[in-house]
Amino acid sequence: MTRDYLKKAKKTATSDAADVRATVQAILDDIEAGGDAKALEYAARFDRYDGDTVLTDAAIQAAVAQVPDTLKRDIQFAHRNVRTFAEAQKGTLQDIEVEVIPGLVAGQKTIPVEAAGCYVPGGRYSHVASAIMTVTTAKVAGCGHIAVASPPRPGVGIAPAIVYAAHLCGADRILAMGGVQGVAAMTFGLFGLPPANILVGPGNQFVAEAKRILFGRVGIDMVAGPTDSLILADRSADPEIVAVDLVSQAEHGYNSPVWLVTDDRDLAETAMARVPQLIEDLPETNRDNARAAWADYAEVILCADRDEMAATSDEYAPEHLTVLARDLDWWRYRLRCYGSLFLGEETTVSFGDKAAGPNHVLPTGRAATYTGGLSVHKYMKIVTWQRSTREAARDVALATARISRLEGMEAHARAADIRLAKFFPGENFDLSAAD
Image 1 (cartoon, rainbow, N blue to C red):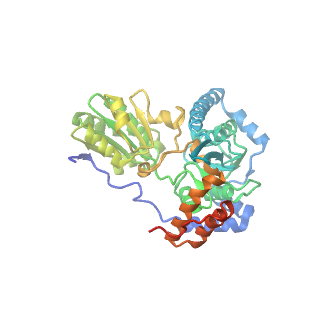
Image 2 (cartoon, rainbow, N blue to C red; image 1 turned 30 degrees about the vertical axis):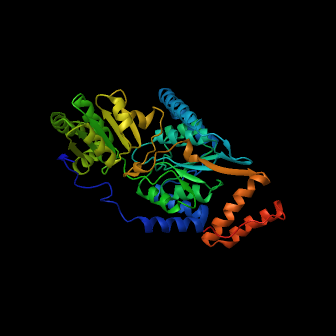
Image 3 (cartoon, rainbow, N blue to C red; image 1 turned 60 degrees about the vertical axis):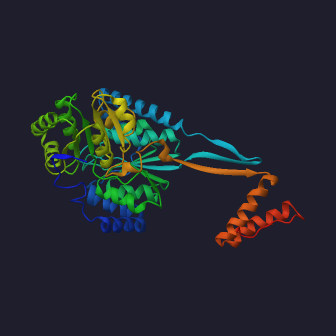
């Protein structure tokens, strides 16, 4: 490829990653051994909060009363969209059965996990949308119990809008507890919760590491790192929209990469000049994040043509991928590696982050090369079953016995032998290993 980096990142999303594994492992071990009391100790230390851990119905209603009606309607709108999309996703998973050979019937059955633990960030930003995305999909999937853990603010508790969203979307319990201790509480079944079968939702590096350590003991949606976004833009794109969209994603955090890939130098240079101006116009906290992300992690890449642009995008495998270019159908069919795709200026990553419908919990750090984001499917187990007539079992048993002996697994072979002897007495079968 003949890429020309008009702006090259000084760092990658993992450049400043601390070695937190030992710290997180120690906290998890401590809480598993010490139970509720130890989790409360960590909550007092890290959350600096001493209110009720499990929100009572009265506390939930008090929080709901604090949410303005306009915001409630917006949350309800987003919830409806996410639920509609999740219900359509669920419709793609069906119980099936097929007659593999005459007399041998096999099937697929979909079963939701019983208990889901949803982590909703609430530190720097109140991630209302994460409550909507995680809880709604778990509810549509049919999970028997849905717990939410979200970090409380000292002297305040969980942001009322998060409480309202979690309650509206179907959470059975809401815990005012963040970080590793919140993840541990859901995993180990503390405070009267059933132990979670799956943990979902975004979080900081400590939350991500806790999920990584616990994976296998419980399911997880993915191990998520800093959010990342890429824009594919040709000369038809509006450079102001390109610049605004880059800044909108850079504000996530100081180490959130944003990338612009284009085949038009004028567009690239115009957007590059505009981004710092837009950043300086942000509120202080947002400005600091976006300024650092743009300075150290952003890239602007000039390509020869759209084929090279698409190949570059697939290599980066972004969490969010925006196409601001002509012939959107070409891009939709050509692109292969992304968490979620936004086609045309009539949509944007911000829409997907908050209210459009498809889930915003997505693969980061090139994980989009092998997985998609959170969906109803993540909460579902696809299991199989089989049933056979004796006549159908004959050929299966013969093949099983011979393959097993070829592999050196004699006990497996004898499980087939005994059925042949019982079902077809007096018949002689060649049960030796295949030639």
